[in-house]
Length: 97
Image 1: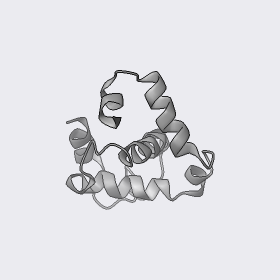
Image 2 (image 1 turned 90 degrees about the horizontal axis):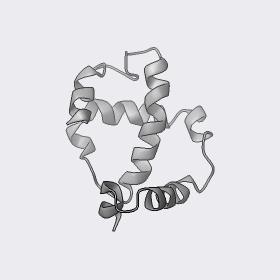
Image 3 (image 1 turned 135 degrees about the horizontal axis):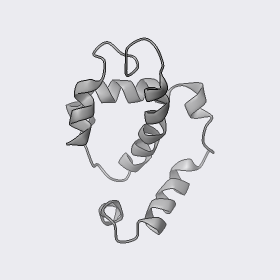
Image 4 (image 1 turned 30 degrees about the horizontal axis):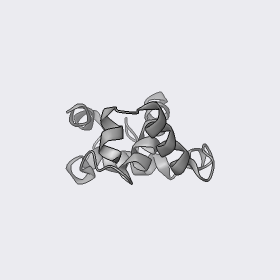
């Protein structure tokens, strides 16, 4: 539901939240999108095709060098381990199996 609300706010042309200019909104959401991407590899908790603006926006953010260089090489495994450890018994943990 919340992603659908956000979808309606994202600029139609992109590539960023407000259009051509990278803003604080983009820098705030980029880490969230990175974590969503790594979780999505394990848990399909939304359908990206149903949120085309968010899908495009997140893809545009995740290809930035700053994002690629912001985490260690095995971040995906570290993050999944963190979710399992800290979220023991939580919603995402139960989806991860």
